[in-house]
Amino acid sequence: MSKKSRLLLMLTLIFTVLIVRSIYSPNIVKPVGINNSSISDSTRFAKKIPVLVYHHLLRDEENTMKNNPSIISVENFQEQMELLYNEGYRSITLEELEGFILGERDLPSRSVLITFDDGYKSNYEYAYPILKEYGFISTIFMITDRISDTTVSFDPTQIQYLSWEEMELSQDVFKFACHTHKLHYLTDDNKSYVVTKPRTEVEEDLRKNLELVHNPYFAYPYGHYTDETIQILQDLEYEMAFTVKEGFVKTGDPIFELNRQGVFPSTTIAKFKIKVGLSREPLFKKLIKSFLNLIRPKY
Image: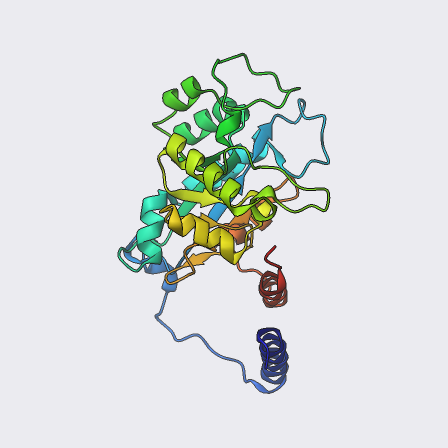
């Protein structure tokens, strides 16, 4: 039986059990004297970690590209970071997440990894002061060929990228990792250059990316990768890589195929709470998401 067939069978069995339980299960009375809320979250260790991914930020009045799913409002970002702070979340590093995945370290239950892709100048202009305000750290996966040699004024009408100077000035909040050097493009049939260019070209690009950033962690452009892509990363001594598959990261997960939680303009604060584990996602949606992640093709 194929992996997809097994999952479909499992989904059918789960739905059957839920229906039977809803019909025949008696009411369950909570034992008197037990108050789970009295157990401090700080005494528990995380079983799963949300890895958030952002791209470009603009203020509502500045954004002329309302249909662009990569642009979220500064106002929403502020609200989300305030929520994390008020709920006692601790931002973590890539190294801490790696130790958690490998089973080498425990992390507090309310841990979160905050990431950005591409290296937009708006990350420095807007995200940096907000993150600093709440005492959070973050990682930016950089397209190193687009890093500016000179620092210019911020212009919300233009697509601008971080300068080397801005990267240096923001190291108290931002750490920088890899997102290709020159291969962050799509072919005419919407496949990443990382999975379509000759292996030697991909190897050279990812080697250059690593040499400039000096941090062996990678995010796949557009989430596209193959088994060969993973092998290239391993050969170059990268240590982890992130997809765009939705879900939390758990101990023992495939270290070169890690989930992230995308944050978009459509991400309401209620949806954001689900993404960071403050609310539960409806079981049906959770099962459907797991199925879609499973059938998502490698390119």
